Length: 424
Ligand code: GLY
Ligand code: MN
Ligand code: MN
Image (cartoon, rainbow, N blue to C red):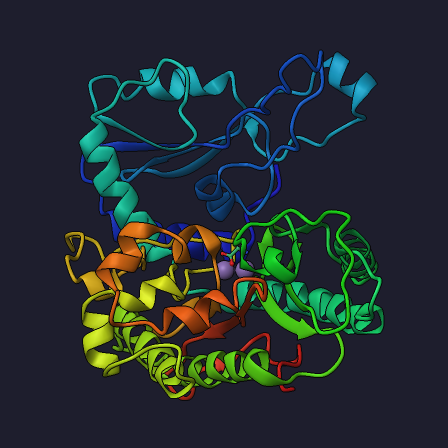
């Protein structure tokens, strides 16, 4: 049986230290493929649970990693069946047969089990305790190793090629779908094995729909095009957003872009050890609000506008999340930290101080979202905060978001996605 790589050994040591089990044992399940309803034997593409993948660095349907603090780690894996050999091809067993797990558990009868990753049939556990262990596990895997960062860089290299190729298609008449296809093809030609999430390409008003699925809409001269896409390689990916203008950047679209770009650059530069992510978010919200006041779209001081939540009219999401082993990698709060009640940062779901090795997104945006701008309750609440008559005329422009992936270090932050241009 192959021995685990040094990378896997060091990840396991890190997790063992962090979760610090005494008499309990740990089981981490990879999970099973999910069948497509009504699809006969078809399944959705299988990805092992991220907690399993982190400890195994490989995919394994039905795999189970077992850990006893008294005698170490074991890899159990379903035996290769004849059916599998016929339909899927031969597969080398990299772990020990899963049939051995029952004996391993029987030898530890009476000890509490913590089941992370995917649930394992027949295992009972204390759900509250499992959540507490998961919190420690998640926190321990936040700082990325050199090998993980290298894999993120591979994904960035593939993405970069896609964004480069995209530039030649940014012309009137190009559809969202065409842009997605041309860009993704380049991701794959440059080593991607998947996209890290469903690529978002939105033209005009569609640029203000956060998780927009590209369709047949064609860009016209002057339209904004928001592209949010990243490649993935070996389960590690990146998450990049750029906003383009078909034709010349001018007027309010240009001002909005520069407002986001200015705030985004400052936020990227602020990602240093010890800095609270929520402060990065808050300062970015203040910065963009100041710009909206300068543009004559908002009225008052940025501090008081953000205090009353008026910035949420145009920036209704958080500044980012962790990224790496998937697009929402190990996000969340510092272990033990309660959900914060600061309304000024209510849209940020991550709450923790930054540390060297963290890779996170910085993705502020300003949007004209009809569902928000036309909401009577918000208009009443923020009656005096917004130049409504000006804003109403901008409802067809969509929005601007700029997203980079930042590696926090002991020194200056490193922008891993800087090679995808964002200057206009
Ligand atoms: N790509 C989705 C996001 O930026 O969170
Ligand atoms: Mn993102
Ligand atoms: Mn994104």
